[in-house]
Image (cartoon, rainbow over the protein chains, first blue to last red):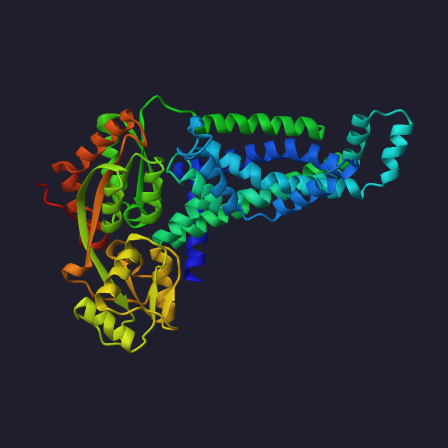
Length: 231
Length: 273
């Protein structure tokens, strides 16, 4: 309990003085996971709506693949990205190994199936007759899909939140492809791992509390956004 | 605000953030692969900042287990290595992955265990101590992760002629800090590097029981990865770093490091030939 109390006060100290090391780590966490989330949303929402609304050959296989992706261990994604970007790998010309870009790629691969799968479930939850009605009323497929997405927006928001949850607190993949380099690829989770390994449990816990608070704030913000659009 | 415009603004903001975060300076960059025990002690920060200032070269440090560090070198993903796994290093050199290798510094591995010392191994010679632990089936925690420390432990067991197995021998596959914590919880013995143990000594209920003898020598070496796997330019930069690391100013930093925090230096610089 002593460590907990100390860490709480230390976390406050770090936040109040806006420690530059902390600022950098938090900034990079937000930038990497935020960009990965934007890309995952741009990929996952259209793909999820398509899979949920339209029938085509290979649909069941695609859905099975998405579900598998949702439960795929992030560390394996990390290993895959590492091997792609490594100097002996096919994408070595990018020179992206141990850079934030590599971390974004890994996180996109982790979050996209989550966003896709949950979006698919959300649009499936909208009455299938709505789509037919909209189309018979003269809506194009795009217009009908957009209308259904609007109808299912709470579910789509949940999909995005799930994607964020899957990456902001992920440690193995970003450690492997980012390398936890100070000032360059160190994010909250890898910093927590490092401080724990160093025996600096108080700093680690302080960082953990910040991660917790950040996740909470992001979720509150998204929910508020949702509440406003519902009115 | 419609959700689309919110998403767009968010995307814009985040891309800006990322661009700022990734903004690359024109300074040349080297990647150093090293072992967690050296990195976690903090010595690299002290060693590298004067080098970065003097030569205007940025050194990115990737800290992993020695086994993984050497693998990063084999794949050419790092330019220079600081590791402590002599046999693996020799193999690495013999296979042509490295073009230059030199010992940089050393300290002693230590055998730590519960202060009550149930197997009565305090101050014994290390092989004798390990034989006693095995014979009495006193709990022993092994890193089990292919790290330099784990390799040392395996080598020591080989020298005793004992094949450790059974309920008393726990392979955890974790870092040194986690292993020490676990050993403390289980009242077990384990082999540790001095630096990590000193960082953890207030948090674990373990004492140093054996810390002498040539068998416990822990040597850290610098290896420059062969330009065939990196590039001639990177290799030349790596040579600058290597030359600096074995220079008198760097050795002075090594011999002082840890004095303030632990009351004793953590490493001894190698005499250079």
